[in-house]
Length: 284
Image (cartoon, rainbow, N blue to C red; front, side, top):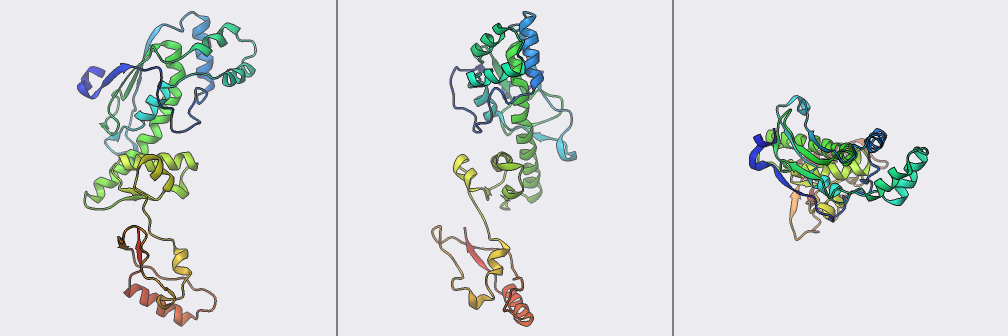
C-alpha cells in the first residue's frame, strides 16, 4: 500500500538525537499499560527483535466529510528520535510488575529507535480512509511501545486540522479566520495543539499568545464584552483607537453595552444606539 503513495512517502533511518517533543508529557511512559505488558511478552518469548511493520490508518473521515488532513508528523518524529526510558520511569514500572524478569528492565534501559524506520505522508496532506498515513518498521517490541503515543500525536492533530480546512473551504480564500479556542480547549495541551493545527489547516491567526511565541503564529484579537461594559458611552471613552502595533487599527464588529449601575435605561438605550452608528475601533 505504501508504494501507491509514491513520492509522498519519505523514508530514512531515525537518527540517534533530535529535538524533544514540544510537550514534556510525551515520554516513553505516555502509553497504554498493555503495551508494556506485550513488550514483556515478546521479550520472554524471544520475539522482541523480530522485524515488524505497523501501519497507521483510519476508517472514516471526521465530521461526515470525504477527506482528512494529516497532521502531527513533526511531533511523532521528535518522539521517535528521542525515545528512551529513564531510570525513574523504569523504577516506576518495576512497582507495577514486581515479579518481571530483571533482564527485561536491562533491556528497556537500552531500548531506543536506532533500528526503526518511518514512512509517512507529508504533514498537511489530504488523506483518505484505509490508506497508510504512517508506517513504522523495526524490532517488534519497540514498534509496539511506540503505537499508542503515535496515535495520540496524530489523531487530535488531524481532527483539528481537518476542521480548520473545512472552515477555510467554506469561508473562501479572501476571509480572515482566527482561532479563539483557548478558553474552551481541553486543558493547556489541547489549547496549544488546537492553535498549531488550526494554522496548518488554513487559519490566519490565534488568540493564544503562547502558541504565537512557540509556533511562530500571529496572535490576534478583538475585545471582550467586559470592555464595552466598562464604559457608559462614547463620551466616556477617552481614546477611540489604541496604537500598539504600528498604527494598524482594525474596525471590529458593532457592539452594544450592558446596563451598569448609575446609567438609566434611557441613557443605556441611547448609548447602544450611538455605538451601533459608530463602530468601536481597536488595534491588533
